[in-house]
Amino acid sequence: MMAELRAFRALRYNPEKVAWEKVLTQPYDKITPAMQERYYSLDPHNLISVEKGKALSTDSEPDSVYTRAASRLQEWIAAGVLKQDTEPSLYVYSQEFLVPGTQTRKSRIGLTGLVRLEDYEAGVIFRHERTLTGPKADRLELLRHTRAQTGQLFLLYSDPEKRIDRLLADSARGDAACEMRDEYGVLHRLWLISDPQAIGELQRTFTSRKLVIADGHHRYETALAYRDERRAASGQGPSDAPHEFAMVTLVNSAAPGLVILPTHRVLANLPGFDFAAFRRAMHAHFDWYAYPYSRAEERAAAAADFRRDLAARGRERRAIGVCSAGVLALFLLRKDANLASLLPGISPAQRELDVVLLHDVLLLRGLGVTSEAVRAESHVRYEREMDAAIAAVDRGEAQIAFLLNPVRVEQVMEMALAGEVLPQKSTDFYPKMLSGIANYRME
Image 1 (cartoon, rainbow, N blue to C red):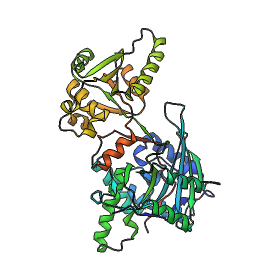
Image 2: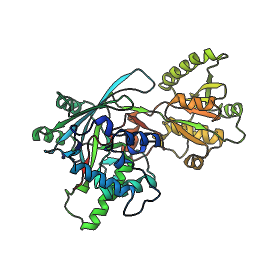
Image 3: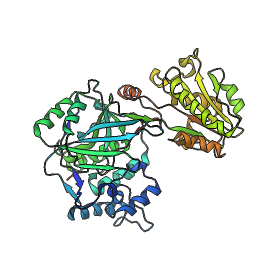
Image 4: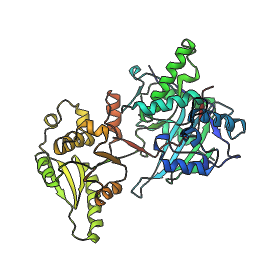
């Protein structure tokens, strides 16, 4: 089996009718209630009405968040707010951004098109995390009503020679068809590739490549479920039916602009919590280095040293940051640690993940927090920003926070291609692909 890439006629916002920065949104699973309200206030044609509309207490089968989403799409198409490109195209999608918490500027380039849906067992498209039932049920109901994909799947492929990146860069010369800066300061640009010869060359470069889902596991599995529904309803149907494909953006795993952010753990309501006892319990497995400060003005310098060392020492040894009341420390896995003994029943690749070391040793053995408790989020919550995790401890809202280095892209690729999955909340690819910058109407 091999990956099949196809051009399509994207349904896109008409810049003569609307301003892109007022109608495009972040992916549905990143939209908070506050963001939802802000999107609604920007423009009546904002994609929020489709991507994550408001549920009402009066919702029923004839009038629900899903039927309203479908109606909005039809209205916008009829009014020319959304227009379908005249020729089948592939799309170059670039993003320029600052890495959060730094002054490092990066750029990322990807290829947007359709990819044939394949079951995981086919060995063409691979996942790196498991999904939850709730989000898939919501996305499937939306897909049934709108018959459109507004959010892109973010897939990785391996091209160490960066041949495809060079092809995309050559196609991204001249004025972009879409250009806007989002609420996080990320500059998004989109170019069309409509030349059949250029499309054919790009299609051929993907025929032997395996694809790994970076973001969009729920949407991918929703698309699979919808495909199976349509097959059942039509008696299999043609192999090139619209529901056999999903809209994706493909990014090279070797690209320097590919960024994964860590997701930190913040714990509260731990009965009998005592940091000194926790540290003693972990002494057999971890060396411990503190970053003391006695005055408030020394805090910033201590925190800066801690951040630097967490990143630097993490390249040499397994490093996990710890913050508790009055304590900022670095836990380094001892050089004589036997991971096979410490983490029995876990694959060698999994043992190399800091998040596995955190959950199976520091949380379980050190604090008695089981995997069931983690899934229930009875003691654990998650923060993307390190400052927010530390601030929760400072305010007394949390007893302890664990601060992580990001998972490496190579680890994601290795584990996914080996058929393994990472623990929940292990990866946060940044920045996100905007919903609505290109839409796939399956009609």
